Length: 248
Image 1 (cartoon, rainbow, N blue to C red):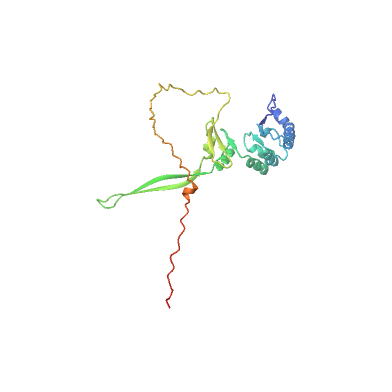
Image 2: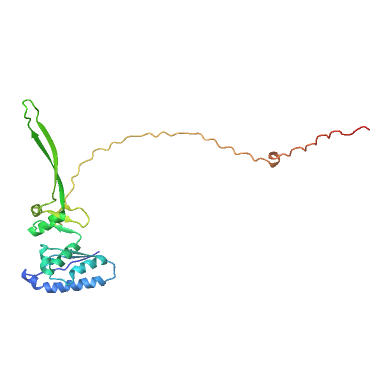
């Protein structure tokens, strides 16, 4: 896998806007060249601060084509409204829909929070209710009725999206359930797993009974001679003929 990173170091923030046309031309040529490559190496292209690098021509259609060339494009934005100002509302929506995975960090503005809340979908909430009716009779019993009420609400409201913790992130996937994850910082020290002694090993001696069985050799059948197997039957003598002679 090939990871491409382009870093532009400027002394002042306003210089980023001056270089936006130059960076837009650079990434336009870069995307055009890697689409023609035939090496078969997957590429991850990370565009941090994508809202400040300038408008890339036909960027909405390019994103739909580079996926077939095994090229992944990561866009880092402060808010989706940056795409609206660069590419217009319609093309910005195509770019947002083309990105199959969306990661939302803390500090989202109200418009972004509404978009995330609608993307998360609804949740069915069941609330148990009880109502008691007093009897009008003197010694009558009260009637207690229990029921459940179901209603739909947003999985996270826009206010709840805006108030997620600093180390939390919301992950929206194309065909999977959304996730709330914790961020991992590469500069943090590695956490060690607590270990404890397992103690002395417990061993058990198991005696295996050996079964002895006397196997007698099988006797082979003796060959049978053909003369003994097939015997000729003795010839049969015909019965005597009756005497039909007449005395004259």
